[in-house]
Image (cartoon, rainbow, N blue to C red; front, side):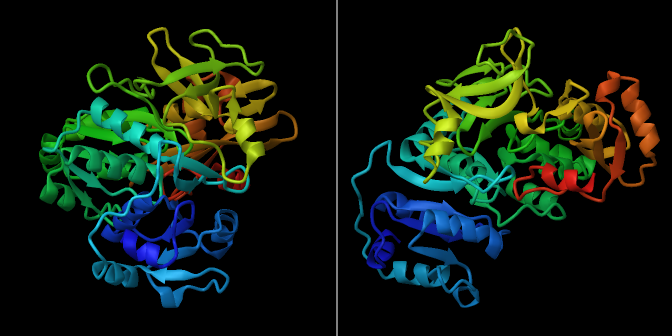
Length: 448
């Protein structure tokens, strides 16, 4: 495949965009690009022209690899069909193709979700990916005997940076799914019998629907279930353990930082927390003046790690704003317990300032998730003429559950300070989410 790409004019430093669902050729293309020093630009397959226009204009790839070349609608951007690439690669030499690379060489340009403005391209280097893979394989004890079921999209660092690289480095057996289908999930898990499963919270919520005897058999094969990309409600962690007999390991990372924190493989996997720094990672939690706060006080989480990106593509202003010396500003509000466990309180941009009080949506979400009628919940701040902002809870009820907004508000009032109690509860059929399961709170605010 590297020879095929080279013959099409791609070389060191060029960008190649991949607009593909999960398939084997995605991995072939990624590995070919790493051999050539070509920078991979993964694009979310749910994106449409408007969303892609910004990424293509910013990254300026030589071409976009697509499933159906004939159906590509952008005349201003060359597209290559993936099947034609695979056919061409099959006729190329099998000799190695190697460019001059080192740890600082960009390997991928991964665009953030752009929830607070235009998406920014995080420059992920070869060194970042190597450090991340080594850290995870060692910490999570991957061996060639493992069986990894990978249903995460490869256009995101969770699937590509974690899943594919843990497989490559450990030599374990992996089954790659095009997508997670909750209706067939139990059958797939029973058929493959994975020892390791990487998922996002919505997947674990869906797996709670699996029949108990099947869940016990699936859980008996697991040695590790990992959750990330969005907060895992503590109640879901407890319910999953009760059903499958496996306690999910929740960890924390970002597109820009790859993995930085995680609950321990051995030791307490504390519900509601993202655990401790991985080996080689340093953290600090600071107030608005940049001063380190005491334990159990909230502040912005800053991290140092060999997994942190080289900056943002074409955005020196954003790169400068993201770093404080050698520290990366995550934008997440966190607290550290006396024993080192980190609890996230939400995005700095998500904090609701109501009547002068800071309200952290995560605290309200965790409480409502414990209610027997609630399947999923997200809390967002909406404008209020008196208090500036007020928290509003957006709730998806469990099947056949009976609950009213007043009942849920009363439930919160019994256990929270008055300024934290949601002013309204809005029932939804589903929460708006990104492909990786992050709740799109900007859309909820518009509904609130």
